[in-house]
Length: 369
Ligand SMILES: *Cc1c(COP(=O)(O)O)cnc(C)c1O
Image 1 (cartoon, rainbow, N blue to C red):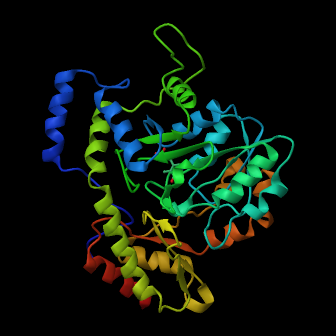
Image 2: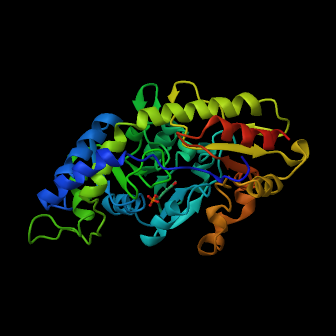
Image 3: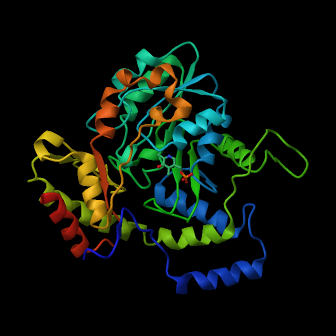
């Protein structure tokens, strides 16, 4: 060890031997995109796997966020979290919507429901929370607030593939949830994504929106965009779906090994499994308490980097610190003190299905010192 680079993630890939015969079939069919055979099959298979009634595939995980906002006709201000990947807030910006940042809960790293009501104004139309690291938001509290004020709820569930709470898919929460199938996610189609909704009417509208607004050969019902997934990636997705359960089990084993050792390291904390939750082990964040650990987060991060361990500081910097958003009233650091504290202490350790024991040991030895 020491020479081989250990990346923060590594994609789940179907075997080429399995993939190639399907490519031949796609070549034979000569139907490459626009709701093709494998596109339909993957939508069906994902509905079954995720236990959701309606799903629309997309070419990435950002476009379903943008289309969700269009479909629900969201305007004005939307309450969201600064502790996420920038795409969450960019989707609002592209729709001409003002993001209102609300601080997070330190236990879950998700938007703090206790702080949502104070951020609601007459212009608020929706809440857009994120299930950060795949840890479920307090969806009941959030729904209560939304119902009380007549707001829509769109979950950026990019991290939450396959996550269940008391046996029920987390993707059932809110009005719409969106997924990313980017190569770095638990389940990937190289690039890809999906939108989950609860009724056929919304599903139809989403399918128009992701295809330029076409509802039939000559009818345009909305200023849609092009968000369609192609047949090659749909087949790739079908093959990956067969091995995603095994991949999640392997990730769980990695988490168990990390926790076993890190439990005894002064100044390093991590997240435990939540009761009643089926987790997907998408990420393994640790939080560095510099005075107790004897080293700052960045010192540990760069020390690991020098030793070829490419961990990542997700999510640092906060979205509210980027130039696009920094000027917003709600982006002020004093409004987001928990988010800043977490963003300045977090490191996501390498986490993927085939991270081997010697790599895990090497990483842990470096952290234990
Ligand atoms: C990955 C990700 C996205 C964007 O997905 P893409 O497929 O990369 O477009 C959106 N939100 C969050 C929280 C993500 O992690």
